[in-house]
Amino acid sequence: MAMQAQTAPMTREERKVILASSLGTVFEWYDFYLYGSLAVIIGAKFFSMFDETTRNIFALLAFAAGFLVRPFGALVFGRLGDLVGRKYTFLVTIVIMGASTFVVGILPTSDQIGISAAIILIILRCLQGLALGGEYGGAATYVAEHAPNGRRGFYTSFIQITATAGLFLSLLVILGVRSIIGEQAFLEWGWRVPFLVSILLLAISVWIRMQMNESPAFQKMKEEGKHSKAPIGEAFGQWKNAKIALFALLGLVMGQAVVWYTGQFYALFFLGNVLKVDGFTTNMLIAWSLLLGSGGFVFFGWLSDKVGRKPIILGGCLIAALTYFPLFKLMSAEANPALHAAHQNIPVQVVVDQSRCSFQFNPTGTARFTEPCDVAKAALARLSVNYRVQNEPGRQGAGVVIAGGPAIEAAGNPQFAAQLQAAVTAAGYPLAANPSVVRMSGPFDIFREQPAVLIGILTLLVIYVTMVYGPIAAALVELFPTRIRYTSMSLPYHIGNGWFGGLMPATAFAMIAQTGDVYYGLWYPIVIALATVVIGLFMVPETKDRDIFAENADGSASTANFRGTRAAE
Image 1: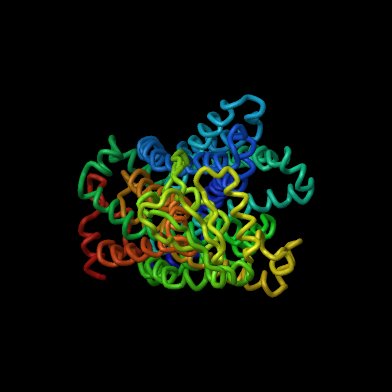
Image 2: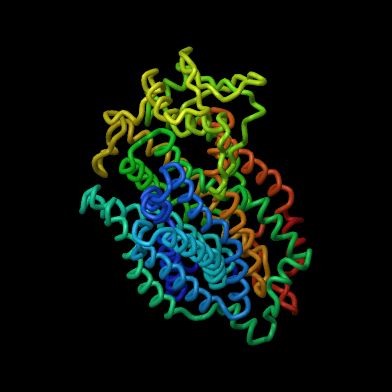
């Protein structure tokens, strides 16, 4: 019977389940990514009472808030899903997500209602994060509980496409609106259109999910009275279950999260903020790489049914960790050759008493670094300048020396930022990427040499993402019993992706500012990915042959099955 299940074609009902779950989740991720893609514009619209630097900090704070609350959403909606059912929890999360996004599109700006606009925006971001925290676990659980044994990796891999598809859809809508109405109109009012479009996506999603039936595994368990009365306590208050969640976080999800965010978000940040590539070109390069590489989700999900979840997830973490430095340096050389050359040929020093410097880790965006050393280092990091620190104990203030020239003092100098930018430009640092090298004016400029090479690099990064993310849903579902599955898998997933992944931009910026090396932030995903390889190799069982319906009479996971899987390894 197992062999027949692995070879039988997908039934109409199974296709309907996958389509309904995947489409709804695509729309949720579309909503969530809009903010990330338009963070700079949103900062200007809702935090205009602050200077440019501060408003960007608060815009990042609002974006980070959506990530930080995701684990709480996992607890709230995971518990609801294990108590009430998968289908109705689906409906609640999609309505909260879609409605919150639509309201952003009609929300008055800070010029109209003052600080209230910023407060409401952050509340809406938190609601989005809560909804997203409950969405993924429900979608993965729902599809997995409809999938036959031996094909869960393939079936759930379609859920894994949704995050990338949502990003891709948001980029297409943004690019389309920009092209139709023009950049000036987009900055004034057109940025609202992608948010307003979400009401149509919400209506489609609700209609689709209303057609779905409850998961047969959950329905049967509830009819038999085996469902958990306290999913959170049972999942995390009992060590036998809590330790599995802990090993899932450290030995699977933590590494998957940083590889995913590096391949999609940090690559976007690196191209635009570090290499100074224009927004349209950056979005176009990322869109092409997503289009070319996303088939890997299904391929690696299918392959995990054959060779196992662990070899693919841990292999993706290892390969990514070993190749990030050469790939990002090649990206720099292709996207902005002048900047790449400046990094190697123009010496810049920050002369300061190092005891007065801070590590500028600022995940919430609320910390203020006002010491001259911190001001100088942050300004150089924003200009993508490589520098080294020359320690002079007892020195007051901080001076920046460019190519042996006179020091530009940061202390008590209101013109410091302007003077610094003029000096690094005069020394040979470009303000932006050379338009003749990388700027794209349309989607088919990819046939020029530099865009083609960049798309190749970015596609390889996306393939790493598909390796670690394609099988992760099946791996997590198979680790936990039906009665607490929604709750148990959601929390480690969202701690891993919401915190380890979501904090990457803030952490990477702090590491760059601390060291003066624009590539140093890559150590963050590399170290975490390698830690996941080691922990996962020894502490996480292989689960591809586990029967998720073979549970004990009380509804708990079969420990014999767990031991047998470890023994087989």
